[in-house]
Length: 382
Image 1 (cartoon, rainbow, N blue to C red):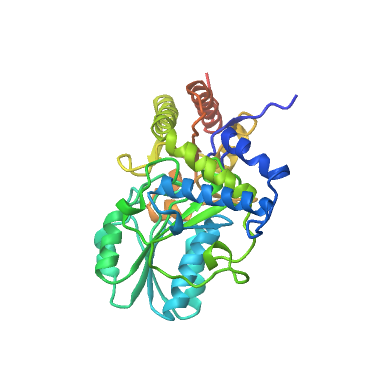
Image 2 (image 1 turned 90 degrees about the vertical axis):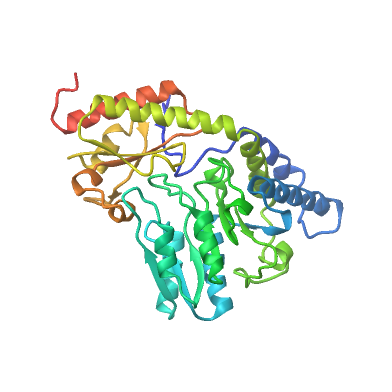
């Protein structure tokens, strides 16, 4: 019988919530209609899509007509960045050095097309300084895009303050909230953003579905061209099955937010305390005061992360914080931007807990990881 390891990679993806999966089932076999069709099959599908839009909007503090369903966070990010660029024709874009490739790569593409891109640094905790935004912003700045929470180290950015600066100078504000939604309260009005990206598979919805919040009154060129789906904002027959799953997952996340935060923080803290108590030469990365409740970026001095991940793989599923390739390890762009010392950065794990991670799993995982680190350092694990 196959025994799976303890899963500590929830920032990579999450299982589908049972309530979300149950909500999806009728749309596999019974309610299979096209939402654009006028007959009862189509009307049932349209009602489900509308309901899911309301559920996602409620989680974000938005109105339903501000929500566009996408194929995921990557499409949402590209829609905003390329869309604003297309609408303006030229101009300056500000982003940060710790963004996901789904933000940085579109910016690089635009740079090759003549747009001016400023990539801001971060401090040692991975935080963007609003003062740096203020210093970089210009009269021709069209967009500021800074993620809400970092996928590697969990640092939460001061988005409301950055958005205020952007708006003072006539720029639009986008935040990639893929890692934040479902793990912390996210309210678009409080944040003051014009655009916000959601990835369903980060909050216990299926892979291949996401959402984009577009503030009322803002028009974006279509990213997908064709028929007039999604209020003529994104062409293509709606992915009803997964939209229903995203809506249900959003409702569960909103309902259970406080309990889930408490559970994730408890298991994350248990991991950190156990590992730092047992091992020397350990460094925790990120902002301890402004961080996701589930994310632990932890570095082990003089250990290679790829070897460590392989050593623990049978019992613990985790990600290397360093960038692992077939035969070498390089420091990740995020850790490099934070100036994490190389002898620590090369041995970084990203441990991300979920709402169902138990304290017993955290204890066992810590023992497995600590023993592996000691072995790799040539110490007696006993």
